[in-house]
Image (cartoon, rainbow, N blue to C red; front, top):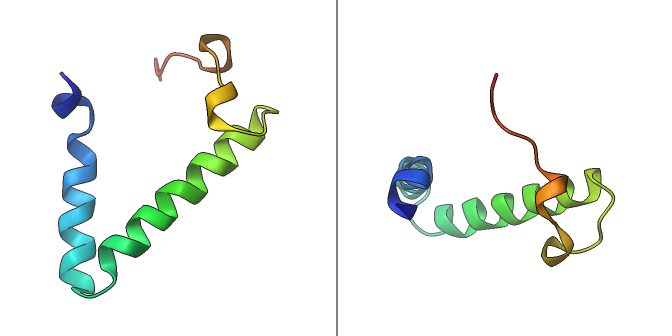
Length: 61
């Protein structure tokens, strides 16, 4: 089931590697890590391991 949920990352990885074979995947991972830090901070937490179910909301839009 994880594969079905993370399928969007595969496309991003292919695009990153195609754009810059030497550093594309490294930059992609750095961007994902930054995004996680920003989201974690936006809900008032300091570390991703502090996130709880009540910090998330359903994607019903």
